[in-house]
Amino acid sequence: MAARRRLLVALLLEDEARAEVDGLRRALSSRDLGRIPPHVTLVPPTNVAEGALEQAHSVLAEAAGRLRPFEARLGPPSTFAPSRQVLYLQVGDDGGAIRRLLDAAATGPLAPPPSRPARPFVPHVTLTRSVPLDQMPAAASLLAGFERRCSFSRVHLLEQAGEEPGRPWRPCGEALLGAKAVVARGGLELELSVARRLDPEAEGWLEAAWAGYSRSAYGGRWRPDEPFAIVARRQGRIVGVATGEVRGAVCECARLVVDVSARGEGIGGHLLRHLERLAAERGCTTTRLLTTLGGPAEGFYARRGYSRAALLPGWREGRDFVVMARPVGG
Image (cartoon, rainbow, N blue to C red; front, top):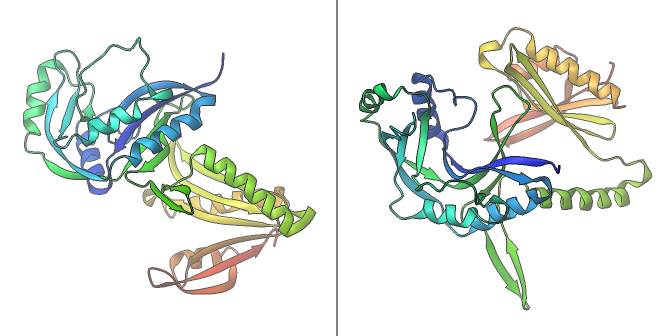
């Protein structure tokens, strides 16, 4: 049987709205907390063939390009009782933007299968799926005062991780609302779109084009960049991550982050040593990274043998940064 991916299309809540809804879900002991971000489902979970993944991303981009960013009202709460034990926040769709986005996205590989029972579309943000039916009125009444405006600027494609505990959902693609533009000169039309990450087709094109350029620029000794991600977990919970790329003889550390609650326990040092071992295994001569000048992170790296290689004045938000490097095995 051909490989299939389980996807859904959703509007993820952003910034303060996401934090507030996660607070409500935590108070209700929702099993979705940490498993799936707060969201408005547009296309419910759908199995998509591996070969149709690029088309699914194209459908997402096309749907998003038809609408501009918009605001909607969250709250007050309601329920699907007695048919389901779901307590949710209503989502106002006065201008019909959510419905139009759903209609545009639920096509091609993202179209619901004919066998799926038809249900009226109710825009909502699920808080919990396990409130006992006799407690539904009290739970809804307790949260009756919750209401706020929220903004939506992008639509997301989420994929379910079938091999991980709890089978969490994670974003695997996105498209900015209203991001598509069409320009023309001399009769040649050009479509431009903006997103925070490349879709699979664009990513494949870029990798091939960049490889061709690099071979011509650097000669036969060039080798493709090798991304890596190192994840530290304690009792199944993520407490730190290091990411970067091996670029020829240099191992670039892009990010090294440790959970605030676990700092001072040596996790950062373990991540860094693992990164350095990876660099040695892949034939690198240098590990390199970027950090703020004079900050605690610079001291952390300096104590582990990293020295300043370059100064970058005003690199970000007006703050000075430094490039730090360390010989592999040094």
